[in-house]
Image (spheres, rainbow, N blue to C red):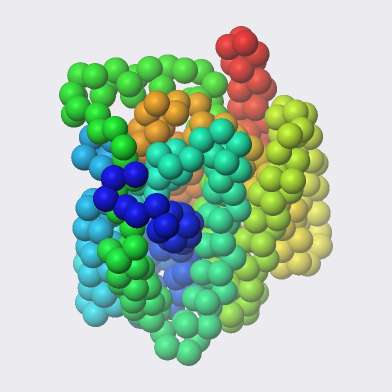
Length: 397
């Protein structure tokens, strides 16, 4: 490994796992603050929700193309630069509370986060192989799920105690601290730099996206993640405005959702040697049952508890499906790890943000009944995606 002492490999691996959830942390930490931000900034609920969409779309679109840059110019210096810019953007959001400034900084944060996490996912392919690589990639969604567990929980208390700006101060200080350790203990992990040939790079992207099992896999994990996006954006207004609970309750509900997602990923890790399609077919059928029951029961029972209980069940299965298909996609093209990592991560964000934000506005999600029906629609689409995915893998042989 160039420019990096081998004894620092374990520290570098730990730092990579710390940074992989940064995208989720950046979105989820201020979810309990969304209603307060709307009131404080004097803007509508939709305008505040747009700040989430802008981050996700900018991050997703960036990840689609950043992989080739990282494969050509390396990971280390780009990562340090991105951490610096991300930290500065976080402080600007806290210090200049204007919706236009927030939009601009969220776009910058989206681009820098994509540089950071694509490079860190590719780091594992750079440094590990075989069973070790399979082990680490299967942990990605488990580690990634720490953000929806920890972030809203912390964000709820920060909102009640210090106000919404404190969320962005925390992001700024956290990334500044990680920056120091990255500079001190890590180095360049890419061992073979690829020439930056635009025509060749476009051919690589085209070849990957034309590979049916990979592209359908992206659709499945994007839809799975959109369940989390929809809940994250909609639940603060339902919990705080419809049912009158505090942002701390929103944080606890998101904590439960995140734990369910992580447990789904951990269960997937435990069953790593079981047949892929037996696992995901069983999971999506159970999802269909729970999403259908949630829709039926939501019209007669106490809405808050229906929302919470069925969200936990559906998100557990979502984490299970996500982890299996995510690991498959990341390992599909090991010779172009940066591009595969970028397409996978970017595809998740682009698909989930468009599906999530689009369905929220199309169905005008303002109560448990509407969020239940949207969940059912997404699970049906996931079921169809898994059916096509299996046929593609079988055809590949």
